[in-house]
Length: 373
Image (cartoon, rainbow, N blue to C red; front, top):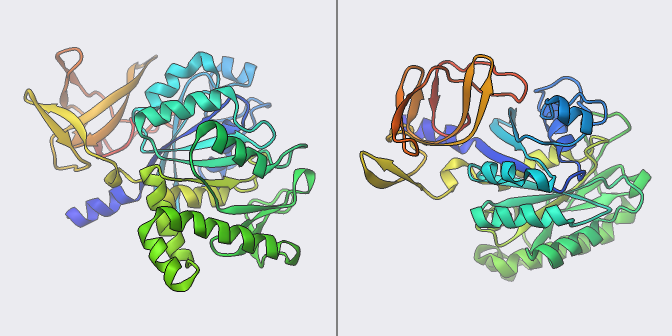
């Protein structure tokens, strides 16, 4: 039974999308929902048809104002995702969301690079110890440059960027990426919904090998197991490289960098693969502090432990108050009474729902472990 629960929790990713306004994070979220089959039509910010920007003000202005939670499935994993605002006026929504995230995807504009709010949300994530991967978006725009954006990430945010992809083409000619781990090309045709895998283009092969070598050296400098293999074989296997990238991401010693164009639906599947491969599950994050019968305790992700959750958002709805919870341990069922430590009173659970931004399809009435609400 315990092994089954661990397998379930290991297949959960609780993450957020962070960015400066207009970097394209809502479009990234929409393409993730489309790629995973959660939606069957691509939502567009400029058309006001997005799932996560559902408030009339958001659709009129074309910006995210409220953090919106959605869930989807990818490669046998449950991905719980929060699309956060990028405008400085709504930074509190980002702060509330970061408190309950296990990981995040930071989105950057390939033309503008690191922008003021990019720095702000990055510092917020640092304060909460949230592991991140980076997605350099809008490579199809005039003036887009992956290397310049990576340099701005290094200089202004001070992480160690570990670039795992090489663009195939740039600006209007951007058609795909070279996967430097497996040395393969992933290309998307106009209007294509999935990538086509093939060999690395001959004209890019030398550059791809050079960048793969730089990636291996950067990883070996920071990961003992990778260093041992690199010294023995003078190279790293894809498996060792992936395992080392996962460890470096989760400790914060490196930031995996991917690239693409969300608007043109290019680069989303590799991004989802990276979320699953590198960002932590609830089992990988440190235990949180909780109170049980007046005693301060550490709570790990265990459905059999006493119930502990954080209410990170409250909405008033026509049918009553809707409280978003991140469950850290224990199990909650419809009709249970839980102790509200802030208010100093008990609260009865009337319903348990999984929110999908604009809609609220009900769960089975029982919530184990580590999701929201």
